[in-house]
Length: 68
Image: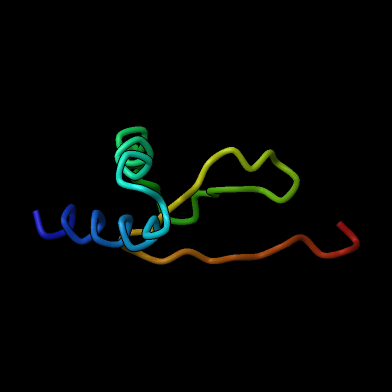
């Protein structure tokens, strides 16, 4: 249970400037995802229609070379 509480604390700090009703609305729409190692979360150029909050593990950022 400590993991879930920790994630909730991070989320509310992230939303500190949002009013309490807005925070509840955002958090109630959130869902937990578990990803496999090396699974892609987002590709450059895709629509940015989600917000990801990493609560455990690591993520690596990269971008394609200019030559493709």
